[in-house]
Length: 309
Image (tube, rainbow, N blue to C red):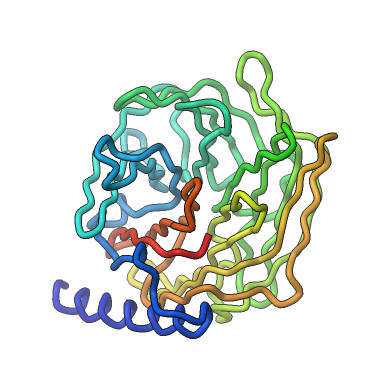
């Protein structure tokens, strides 16, 4: 498979570079990098990413990656140290109730070392990460789960001293757009996530647009409140795959905790990635850098940086 993978990566890089040149009006920024392999099979793809911090020498970033494994004892969480031209991956030990099919993870603002991870059927796990161990503090279902909802995305936004959560049913092809949910979020003293009133918005991806499209495969919110989403097309465990990252709209949280989501009438495509299934979008703090992660099923997982946040 090595020769097809090399050809695939070369083609994807060419298309991504051309797209950025056209959409952003300039060549790829200095922080933009090539795809780097971080997993070699269906058990090691990247289903979600959370920023953990810069490396000690400031040359890279540490990211937590969730894996959508379902069987007891399979890896749920890893740490990726991402540098230009060199990535390393180390497993974390999961302590507590073992989730099925983790699809997203997000750092909790103002709570160092604490994260929220989401399973596909809507179970939210609050985690405490210490070194190579992730301990489940508490878990709870999402509110307002709709019939047939399948979740791949979760983001947190802190504004005006309040916290809100965004998540989405991924949707499926032209007849089922994604449903983007938003709600205020607090935590009980014992750690349980507590959601407020839920709002819903339908969302259809401008790219890709085939029958296997998952309209929202991940969400990241910039410091200014821009909502970036990834969308992906999946024809099966061996592909072919296709995906894009899009500027989908904005979110605001008032001082009273009211959450307002405004989706763009014509979302802006920031990059397309043929042959890759992007399932993770993570904006880095105080930076335009974005880390993307893929879950390419039997082919494994990749990460790369762009400058679109």
